[in-house]
Length: 424
Image 1 (cartoon, rainbow, N blue to C red):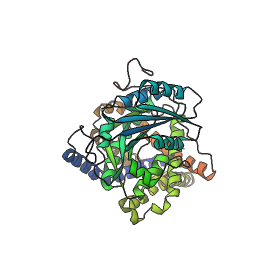
Image 2 (cartoon, helix red, strand yellow):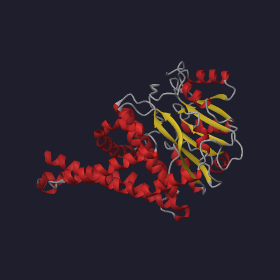
Image 3 (tube, rainbow, N blue to C red):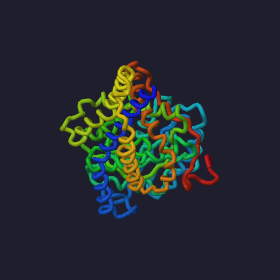
Image 4 (cartoon, rainbow, N blue to C red):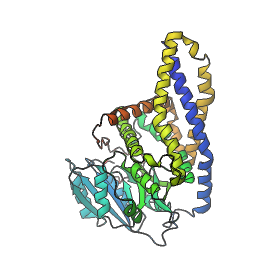
């Protein structure tokens, strides 16, 4: 039994090493991003090279059963430094008092509008908000997001020229009251601090986060409304922006803080939903995968498909095959020094990339969560099986469900909510 366990750990260790080596290849592009940003960005003031004057920005907030967080979200947006702003809240048929809270906000603040529709899903709620919005730039967010005063301004700076159709902001966890959320706050920097920067430079950023993304109105009018038949509406819309020939950029200083799953069940459901969205969008846009017509993004989709969809199946098959060999022939199939490979190569490489990502995100304070890193392999293993479960649901034609997180209203980051407001 010990040999079988060693075999499983060997596969995980080698997977860790391979992933680390691939990410290492993206480091030069991430550093180029930082060099360009330091050279070209004059600072936080202003509205970006595309806008000679402040454009009207419409922040669209879809909500379903978001009574706990909706007020803090809208109030944080209203504290924005951007001078021309409206907030369009859309209640997707909630049974709690989400809509009543929206109405109170609209009555107190002329920039806020409260709309309601029958329950139809997040994509439909976003389409309702977009149709009602008046802005030249539309910012699509989640109802638990908390903005900083400069979030919108910094997001607009991502519109560097007329080729840019959409800008992705930088989302970070706000509820750091659990071991799990502390781990997520740390390891998420690898995706935001490192990979998003690199993929911006390469012209291959695959998703504008549903938590914080800005779109030019004319681009949305060209590519069409959000699809309501997929769980990955933000991913699908981003791929259509690429298909239309626009660039997608990353604005790392445009921060929004939102709740991360605080339970294993919540994390599993969220990641399965994301994985199903990936499977659905890849199927919908399979003609883009590897197609040079779509430039670097089409070529990148080969890597995206292999690493995000194919690799988990290969990893599980390798685990099973090696375990069977060990059971049949004994530990001869497991190198006696497997642990050295992991300790001397995979683990230090992953830690180095994590440290670089944290530094790029200018978040050294998050290093105080380093004590959670022993759980990283457990998380990585869980993510492997998430894709398998998502594939099972897709093959079984399971119903698409929003499956949003149960909100706690916990805010662990200071300065984001009013001291006397809800959730404080």
